[in-house]
Length: 140
Length: 300
Image 1 (cartoon, rainbow over the protein chains, first blue to last red):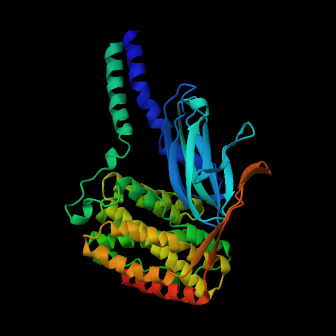
Image 2: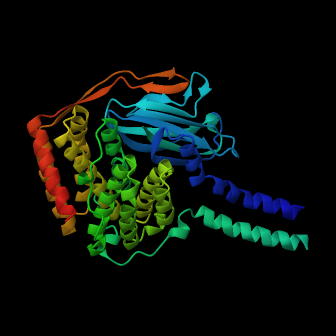
Image 3: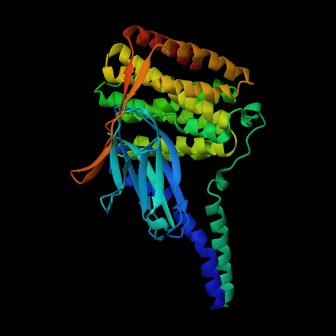
């Protein structure tokens, strides 16, 4: 029994890791249902953090262009407790978040009116461990 | 007996886990010994370089804007995918890879699957020469191009392959190749937009062309990091001519407060800030001319 437990504990991280990859990007792209064309993805895996400590965050720099409407959506590994939250910043100014008025959205649209560099932040609710893939696409 | 079987099972999983963890490990190939395959001492930190490269726009964004403007497709705007085997240096190959990637985005955007095969064949050949061919799934792309009902998958796999090649190059300290690839994508996107606006005057496309002023500056910074190579120096000299053409284009920002709203069940961010581009007909004409000169030199 101990041996079985050892095997499960030892191999489970590899199994979790195996799910935290391109498959999630494929799921997020499938969710676009042809409404938008894929541009790039942001793969994120973050460990759990204690509640009162600063929550871990993954940051990605992107350029968005005026006149283009973008969609940000996210797919998460359901084997982990963290629900992903995707946020868009222009410098240090928050433009919007997939967590809005107490509700989790899987995506948001951003009709861009200002060309420039932006930052995409991905975190997991309450600093829980999570694995996710965010996808940036351009609406057709 | 059961423990023996479990040990074999565990070993198999551990081996599989090891390869799953080293995500691109199975795709690694030794690059040929050539100066372009190793980053020299960079003046700009690697992280800054990567951020600059990350911010160069995707191969399909310009094409998406052109299609959105209702402008019809023209094969005159794309480069010739033949004779890529004549390109001898990795400098030429990487630039052409980017150019063809941008063309592929344009073809895909307009569902020109009949023309796609020649482009993906040329891209595969260049990618193999640069030792990144393992990220370009030629057979699947060919299948998707032949079966034209699967256009979204074709577009996704094409762009995703380019992203993976680019990531791999940077992870393996071949930022110079990555820099050339994104420069090729960018210059071809600009060429496409300038050729379109020449025969189809359009305010939004003209504004997007003007908008490229900042991107051009970033590309010159990226390429300038490899100034020890005379090919890079020559390319930067050409791009500086384009920078001169952009000199009097003005870009200003009007700040506003963003807001979030729910529209038809979808979450939408209203930015309320805007960038304003001032570009005269004369400036645009000059940019069109210099862009064509640089791009045509690259595809000779």
